[in-house]
Image 1 (cartoon, rainbow, N blue to C red):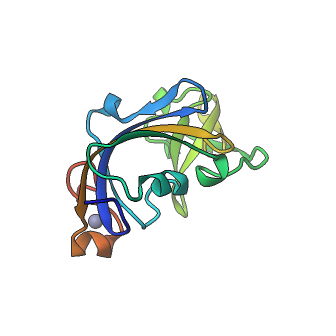
Image 2 (tube, rainbow, N blue to C red):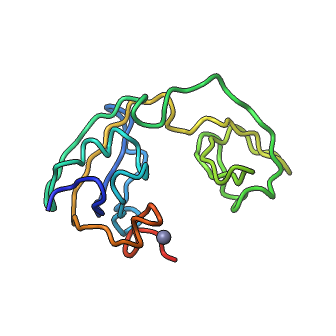
Amino acid sequence: MQVAKDTVVRFHYSVAESAGQAIEDSRDRGDPIAILVGHRNIVAGLEQALIGRAAGERFAVVVAAADAYGERSSPALQRVPKKYFREPARLRPGMGTVLQTAHGPRMVTVVKVGMSVVDIDLNHPMAGKDLEFDVEILEVRAASAEELEHGHAHGSGGQQH
Ligand code: ZN
C-alpha cells in the first residue's frame, strides 16, 4: 500500500538544519510516530515527500522553511510566569517548549529563564530554517472511520485516548 490521503503512515525520522546536526530523532524516544495523511498533522513539505511511498522505503528530503515551520517573523518576545510551563526547571535558552495559550498549545523558543518568569520568543524554534528529514517508513495502512473523524492517527505512535 502506498502513502496517500487518508492513510496512516508509521515512520521513524530524524530532522536537522540543512547540512547541520540532528535536532530531533524519533529513535531517541523509542517509538516511531504515526500520522494521518492529508489532515495537516505534519509539515506540508514532509507530507508531500511521503506521498506515493511504501513501507520499507528510507529517504532524505530537504524541506524549505516556507513548507516547514514557516518564515521567521521578527522576534515576538514575551515574559511569561513559570507556572504556565509544564516543567520549568528543565527550560534552557534556545530550546523549544510548549506554552499553553488561550488558542491551545503552541511551540515557542526559550530566550531567558529567570527566577519566576521565562522570556520566550513566540516563533517556533525551527521557523525560518530549511530542514533536512531522514525518514524510514515502517507501515502504511488505511485509516479507520474513527481516525478520519478525529483527524489524527490512533494506536502505536498516534494519539492515545
Ligand atoms: Zn482521536
